[in-house]
Length: 326
Ligand SMILES: Nc1ncnc2c1ncn2[C@@H]1O[C@H](COP(=O)(O)OP(=O)(O)OP(=O)(O)O)[C@@H](O)[C@H]1O
Ligand SMILES: O=P(O)(O)OC[C@H]1O[C@](O)(CO)[C@@H](O)[C@@H]1O
Ligand SMILES: [Mg+2]
Image (cartoon, rainbow, N blue to C red):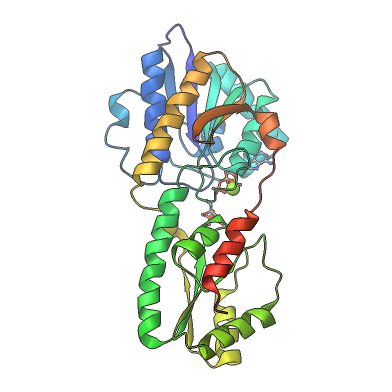
């Protein structure tokens, strides 16, 4: 059954992020309220290619808001990366009558969406990634929950580290983005932070600083290491060998992606989901939804891709000022 305003498809793609469910719920409920049929597509872009989609009702999205993960499932689709995959996806969207596709995902998912738009599918992107690595927006769904999860874990590590007078290397997620590491660096008062965007592989300087800190009376130290720098076990061994300080490595891994979303993630995911539908309703095409300077906004997908973002120099400097001893 189709209403006069047409069909919207919604999918989640890339790594799951807490708050994705809240965004889907908002898309469905706002979509229905504004007069659209909303189809939930399962398993990211694979779900288009395999026609895995169902019409969603108000009731279908009950009891989802408070849960992490994504009830639509997610995937990293190799087939969709190929031109043929995108062509096929566009044909299926047309055949199913899906005029607009709402993609909730990260930078990779948005690259896919941008490319799909060139085949005539109207795409709207909602930033959903714990990595916070999308240039046009200050906020991405899931980052707040993930960074709070990592922060709590590091607080716990600090207690055991302190009791044993050890050094702790803790690896947080971010293969090419250091935002979780930067935020934990400041929020946990880490003595050292290693970010993929910044670390110059000068291990000698790092080891010297750790040694100096101990001489200055620091009984324990936390080194927050981003996944993109990695090799945490090796680093722990290097520290122990070079400084004599007993050192342990902890890789927080995928536990940072799970968990009930924070109020902030629920709130902005809900607002972005609703806003995405209203952008469609107002006839704007191929837009990405963002949050900047305290406001929701939407930007043309090609314009958004021309923007770049890097670690804020001042935040990075202060993280180091606050963590380093004399
Ligand atoms: N260049 C591309 N062309 C077409 N599709 C792409 C491209 N890059 C990524 N995608 C699609 O988007 C999916 C998700 O991308 P990716 O694995 O980079 O995650 P993401 O969306 O950046 O999320 P996160 O980084 O939070 O895990 C890919 O598996 C692929 O299907
Ligand atoms: O779940 P996967 O495929 O191991 O991906 C891990 C990657 O996904 C992210 O968690 C983002 O979703 C990155 O920080 C990390 O590098
Ligand atoms: Mg990404």
